[in-house]
Length: 342
Image (cartoon, rainbow, N blue to C red):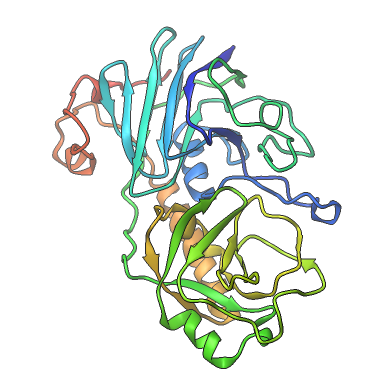
């Protein structure tokens, strides 16, 4: 059985948690830009955390299936419809054969995820199904999905329709936390201070590999060329232009620009999800603070997934209505009454 892509966004790919362990061969792990959103989508569909789903940038597209299944959309608020029924993100819903799932533009986010019960069953390459566009491996022929593509699906087991509790909102002014280096000694103290004291903004020059920032120049007194060494997602490279580049999920494994700092693991998804043009600041933290932040973020996601609950039989229950985003369209009680296993 397969899932058919009727229309696709320009950045629609198959993604899972990535393929660690291949960096010594020049292949980065890739995987989801927002791993937590992917994990939540899979949990809502009863999948294990390793299952493959769809990642989209900006807007999703239109899909249909040959078998009844459950699906969930996470990552941010957007217009989700089966036919004309408006549905909610961060919940699982049913899609029947012949019905069309439409996913519109994200609001206040950049990367969205669509999981399907059972998971996508494209062949594993080096232990993962993630699409690595730079190397053309994984997913469907190592490429972005196109109109008319058919994706195989894993067998699934019946399960309830679930909803996730609302996440704890982050403050809009919360800085992106970084660890200094590893080449921070290439920069004067005044430049290191500039990294924290002035605003930066995400430019339209961004993809799964890296994001170019606009903001103050960060000239390196030691020069902008180093003997190539290892890189990792979150590293902030500074080329000769003085404009920093933040490496993302599909970054190269080595690079020849000095790295002034590295975005901590806990904050990388938040940076990835910021819409183009968003202004923010960096804040340096210690290794101990970075590790504590990761434990806190992981614990919060664990708790949210542990709190998944079946959608209520009564679509007019006050606690359920308060959890719904009714701004994007017309409230449809029939869409909220999809109870029971698929």
